[in-house]
Image 1 (spheres, rainbow, N blue to C red):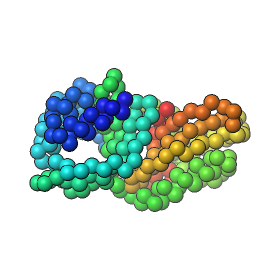
Image 2: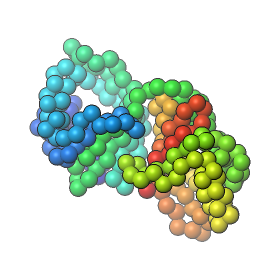
Image 3: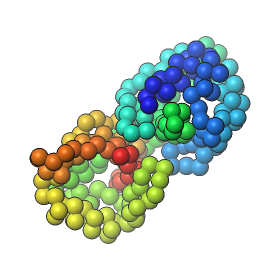
Image 4: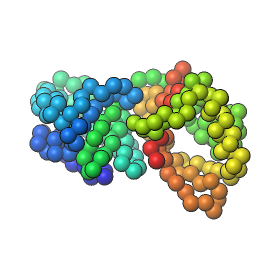
Length: 225
């Protein structure tokens, strides 16, 4: 799955338009994370990349961190513009969703908001989760928190429902523990790669938890499972 992402980057760096397009699904979409798509087809991508390869060449893109799980790749990047580029240097996070071996969706996160505060509240909620301190854990989340599958259903709304769910989880699994495998951050968005065990002898499962922070609290969590 991740090889198609790598092929896309190699083609872009080589100024290879057809190589870039060969990595994309026919209904390829591009959007800001959590926002409406502003590009919705491979034909649209052809026009966009034809301009971008001329106007926005990059001299270097450094991958500062990467996570891969299921059909999703998340990359934290710093890019430097190439000679004659109209683009400034950029710090971004990119979320790629792959379907049938091709990139179906690309979502971007810019470096906006207090990243240190976002990292702090995500770390605090995980620490409270692992010691099953329900009050401290719930205190990290906004009153109107939303829990969803990435690009899928929203399956929980509001702090009352959130409290009730995790009160049940802690009661059912008193030895539940989430190991932090990795953490990426860009502005007010933090992504944790977590390995969860319901008990010390239990089979672990992995998730990517994408936390969006607003006004110092976690407003939304999108899961990749």
